[in-house]
Amino acid sequence: MFAHSRTVKLSETDATGIVYFTEIQKFAIEAFEEYLHTRGFGVLHIIESEEFLAPIVHITADYLMPITAGDLVSVHMTLEKIGVSSFTIKYEVKKDQSDFDVAIVKITQVTVDKQTKHATPISRALIDILKMI
Image (cartoon, rainbow, N blue to C red; front, side, top):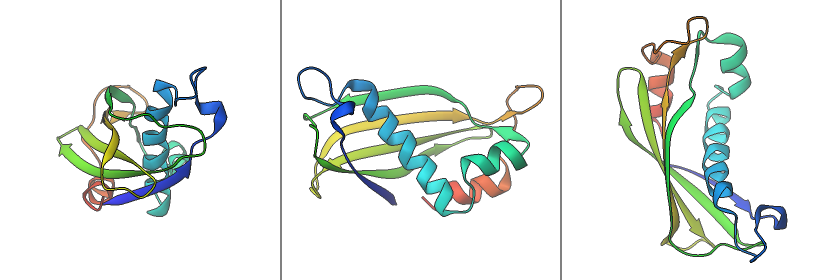
């Protein structure tokens, strides 16, 4: 399991002082990008060197407790499902080093050929990286 920690910024909250709902999704995407980077397979590498892209095709988020500016959150990733050309990662957001979730995000991505934009099988390299989450 990979975990990424960050402090919530004031600019990520709404008028009530609670994290704006789309920001939780950004926290998850940020964690995934950081994970790829730690494996030497960052987004820039994919864009410049690989034959595929991996757009998000489905996302769900459950907000279980409020998160406010200044809170330290950690995003814990687990690979939930991997198919021929798609994968789903579950992101559990925890606050202040606690064991309970304050939000759960699930993101499904599909690998597509850069040229045709059609689904393509997940590369062996990416499969190996995903299985290490």
